[in-house]
Every structure is written in structure tokens, then in C-alpha cells.
Image 1 (spheres, rainbow, N blue to C red):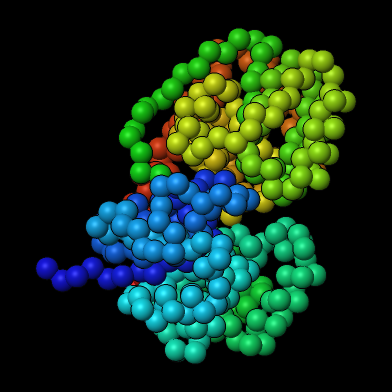
Image 2 (spheres, rainbow, N blue to C red):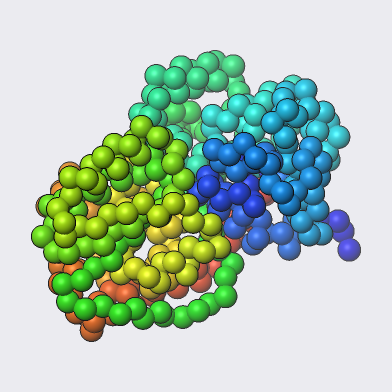
Length: 383
């Protein structure tokens, strides 16, 4: 039997980490689905997002064998530098390269400098939503200067961009031009045991909402709290996630003190990925009016858990109301968010079950889409 082709994958944070959210999940799902056909050699840090303490379960500055098809090299803080990355690349044979993100110094830029010097082919770069207009507005001047220099140096020349949809393809073309090599492959879902429709108890004039995302401006938590302040029904709103922006977190917690007594908003800390599915069963809907998502793994997980979603229209999850899976609402339409939450709060069990089943059905259709897997395999074929 011929040896499997080897994919060298670079990402800032990887399993057992979970605090960086979507990118970790996207890569972990890609590896889980494709490892029967490829060997993966993953290069990452030995700490989780916003953490300084190394994982206790890994050996730093060394290859860790996860299984026969997955090897992970965990760089320590002291070991992570250009010299050691170049050395690792010179010693590691590979057939394909998969880079995550546009701006990572150690896990995108330095590898690309090495590959350019060696004239390496078969490089795929996942944009991970970083070129969306909303994402580019955050630290916009710095990012625009970098992109200008990177294009002048032809840093991204000769590689293939991975876009997760037609909108992201347009975002990439808006920066790098219409002739840029781009492949579209949607993010893959978790490989999970099918649990079926999960009914939760719902009475009229009662609603428990949840938000699971890092605490940062782009997730729009403050906007969610502003919406809830105008809702007349009694609402429980629990939010989970690592604090990425402490100033923004303080703004949110300060605003909570201004909420009326019938709105109960509480920060519940960080929740590991393995616990998310079970935790979603405690709530009636996900409420996340995000400024933009490249994919939104928590949205899919909510739908899989039979939990409808109330989100913005800045994600790939659209036309939810038609499928009775939830609501995707324009951020400028605050009154629609308020109206939707009050309507859902006023819903009794029988009607709520229609939305809950609609959420589960939408997730089921998405995860059973065989084209999705074929598109991801095609990332590592000749463009």
C-alpha cells in the first residue's frame, strides 16, 4: 500500500486548546475527516489562546504522536522563533502545506518566507474570515499597511487561497485581484455521534438565552445587552467565553448593572469545547448578533442541539426563519431583534418545538452534505 501523502499544517493554537474558538475547531474537523486519506503534521504553540502555562499533556518542542496519521509539534514560548521554524521545515518532509490565517507572524509569514526561498508549491492558505470588511476594520490601519507590504513583496504569490464560501471568495479577490487562485470549501462539522432531536421544556413568558463566544468587540456582546435592555419579558441571558478584550469586557459588565430587574445577564466563564453540546441543552436559543462570522461553529452546534439561533445577517447562516431554525437579522434593525426575543419568550411548548425541530433539521441537512467533504479533499489536489 502506498504511503499516505503528508499535509504540513500551521496554526497558532490547536487541540487540546479551545479558547481560540473557530479556527481550532475548523482545523480539528478537517483533520478528523481527512486523516484516513492523509498524514497530518501540525505545527502550533504549547499553550492555549491568552494563556502562558503549557499544556500538561504534551511534550514541548517535539513531535507528539496523536495517532498513526496525526503528529503535532508544540512550540514552547522560548523555542518559537524564525531559526527553529526554518530548521523544523528543513527536517520535515511534506507534500502539501496548509496555513491558517493571513496575519500570523510565526505560523503564516515566517513559513511563507521559507517557502518562497525554496520555491515550494502546493501551499493552501485559509483566509479564516480575516479579509472580510468588518474584520479589516479592527486595527485597520496596521492591517492595510501590512497587506500593502506583503503584496509588494509578493508574499502570497503562487499559493491557493481557501475560501469557505462565495462571499469570502469576493473578499479575497477584493484584496488580491480577480486572477487569484481560490478554492471554495465549506467548513466541516464535528464528527459526532448522532443524538437526534432534543426536546427542552418551554413555558409561556419564559426564555433562557445563551451566548458562547470570546469576549471581543467583533462578537457584539454589548449590542446584545443593549437589545435585552429594551425587552419587556423576563429573560435569562448567560454568556460564556474567554476574555480577549478586557476593556470591552468591563464595558459589558458595567452595562449589565443598568439592566432592568427582569433581565438576568450573567457571565459564566469559559466552557471547554467538549462541554458545549451538553450545555446548549439548558437554553432555548443562542443569541449572538455578531459583526461577522466566516462560519460560526457555535451556530452549527446550536442547531445540532435543537437550539434555535438569533443571530445577525453577517454569517453564512441565512434564511433561517424560512426553515424555522431561527432568525438572521440585520444589525441596523434593533426593533426586529427585540420583537423576535419577545415573541420567542411568549411562545408555548408546542410552537417552540416547531422551531427546535427546524433547527435540528437544518443541521442534519448540512452535516449530511457529501459535496462538503469532496470540496475539502479538493483543496489538496492540483488547482
